[in-house]
Structure formats: C-alpha cells, structure tokens
Length: 197
Image 1 (tube, helix red, strand yellow):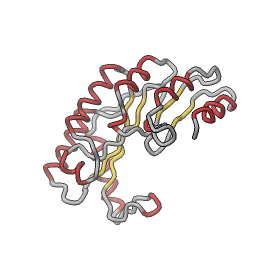
Image 2 (tube, rainbow, N blue to C red):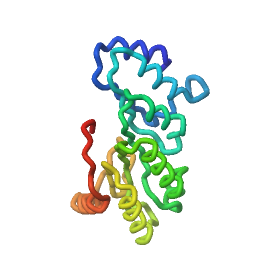
Image 3 (cartoon, rainbow, N blue to C red):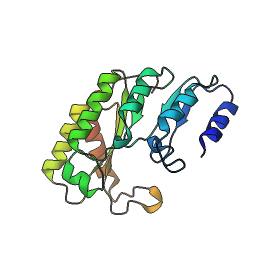
Image 4 (tube, rainbow, N blue to C red):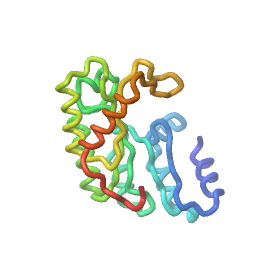
C-alpha cells in the first residue's frame, strides 16, 4: 500500500486509542513499493497524526530491527515499547537449517541493545522445538537462551512435518505439545506485567 493511502486511512478512522501495524515482516515496509525501506518514515508520519494516541508494532524479523528503528521507538512517546520478534531457535546450526539469517550471538546483542535503549520494553517471540536433527544439547541450549533473555511472552511450538497446511500446526499428540510448551514457558522465567500488554 502506498504511504499516502495508509496515512489517509489512519486519519479517517477517528480517534484511535491504539493503531496496530502488522504484516508478515512489518519492518520491511516500502521495500516492495519504493525499492527502499520506509518503515521509520511511516512511523514518523503516523505518529504526527492528531487522532492516533499510540502505535504498536507487531512481527518484525530480528535483522530488520535496526538502530534507526530502535531510536525511533525510544524517542517517540506514541510508540508502545513492545516488539514481537520471531526468533524460532537459539542455536546457529538449527537456525541455518531453518533458513534463518540470525545467530545466537546476534540475537543476544540485539536484545541487549533493545533493553539498554528501552529498559521497559516488552518482548515477545516464537520458537520451534524438535526441529529435525535438533540434538538434546541444542534443545537444552534453547532452554538456557530463554532463561537468559526472559521474554514477557514466548510461544514454543513442537515441530510437525505437517506445518504449512493452511498455516496450522497439526499435532499428533496434543498432550506432548502442551507439556513442551508449559515446560519451556516455565523455564523462560518470570513474566513482567506491563499496563500496555
């Protein structure tokens, strides 16, 4: 969607308590239409609208969370200090098999920077447990990673070969999925409560 069309639509919606920006990879806005990233510019223009009281950004891939985006979030009081960053795993070999560009080291550095710049930021992520060839050691390293970062919310899904059918995770043994999710959620640490979550 063209930026002017988005701004016009947002302005036409009346008083907005919260404007939610979401896409498959929200922070890539503009790359298809303009040949360059214009997400921070879009945030600045949306924030300038008088009818928008708050802006929430959902679903940003970690490599798209740039220093420019972090600065904009930090300095703009209208942007809610919240990010949903899908990491999928913590271990480099598994991430490479998944086709992810990140590494454990980059993820740790990113989250350290986010928390340094915005100490009150709420962070959410998703992870996959049981990816083909994942070792017990890699699984334990994922648990350690979750303990280290302490997300306000982390969804952990058991890998299924049927992933992709209508975007649904089909599970053969629902109880096993729940056991994994509950265990990892417990091990992830204490949840901080924020008024805007």
